[in-house]
Image: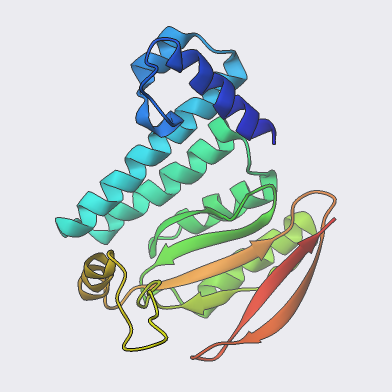
Length: 220
């Protein structure tokens, strides 16, 4: 709720100069500077703008067949922005991201979900093995006294529009999905659920098409 209000206030100030804008992501950093929001509102606004730029850069990188390692840095930059500007990370998530990106076979890593605990997504090569993940898990356990679960997966087709009266209709982004599968056929990933402060976690197995995953249920 706090981040939402900060975004609204930053947009309100910006719209005093540019009333045509309908959302914060349409602004730029110069407008944020001119609007002169409070320090916290400015940090939140800058995260939103730069995150939008990273998404567009990633999309462009896929189309131009940019190297996965370069694209992976966008994920890590996203986490750094979440931690320093948007402030929805926590020491546990930061520790996992820093530990993961220190490994040569990790292309990038960032928190996933709403933050404040939860999980970290790491984009890796197939040379990043289960033993490598367990080394990081043990280091996390030594520091925080918790042993997080690890789930490995490979990319697949994304969301589709289903026509229940006929054949499946692909979403408009299907071409991008096919490009992703074609460009990165050997990528693997790891999700490392972790715990925020004053939260508990219960893991349960959930069946998938290939094997099973451990999903974290965060409460508290």
